[in-house]
Amino acid sequence: MLANILTIAGSDSGGGAGIQGDLKSISATGAYGLSVITALTAQNTVGVDAIYPVAISFLKKQMRAVAGDIQIDAVKIGMLGTPEVTEAVAEFVAELQCPIVVDPVMVAKSGDRLLQADAVASLRELLIPKASLITPNLPEAADLLGVTEAVDRESMVKQAKALLRLGPDAVLLKGGHLATNESPDLLALDDRYIWYDSERIDTTNTHGTGCTLSSALASFMGQGLEAPDAVSEAKTYIRGAITAANLLNVGQGHGPVHHFWTLWGQDG
Image 1: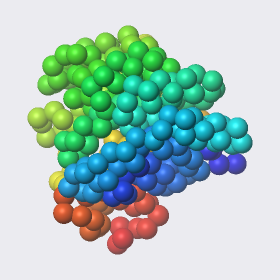
Image 2: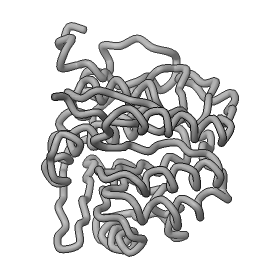
Image 3: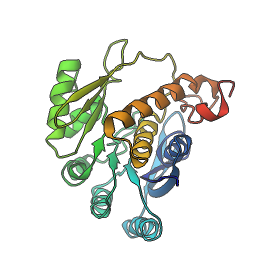
């Protein structure tokens, strides 16, 4: 039986991130994707033109409809947008008994803000304590903690420890924003810290990398893998998706990664 993975996130009309990217990632990693849409966006590879939040009453109906009929084996949570959406989602996942992966989506690749400033407190206080794993990048971690952005491995460890104190079971702090040739990620658990090292890949097609990684993590955790193994598998998947991204020809800005690189082959 395939695992059922629910993504709760915003819609990306460009197809590379958000709900669309999540469902591609979940499918490519061997699970069945379910979705609850928190907001509609008018966006492409260049930027976000508009955001239209889903009414809270309809958001709750989506969540109740899915949970009332289908077994949910893991949840990935992405773009939330407002405090009200964050509160509703936190209330919903509190009733679930499955891995919860929270990707604290705050700013799009284009620089457009996707989480209102007043929603950060709701995310930090209501949702993150319920997470099995959170996956912030360095700017997101700094925003959550109210500190300056980490600039090296030592400061990444300090911030990962501080994020653990917010209450999640584990933290995957992504180091892609470091000013180095490497892009190290740090998995922080209660009793250990694990580094995942990789070199940067020369491509501008990186739209949706965070969504793709976090939904792959939810997929693998929903299939029974513990966090360290899920991170290893998800890192292998996203690295391949980024490496093959230049096979795509989508837009004039930050194009998407190649979600189906393992299925379509390197010739596209």
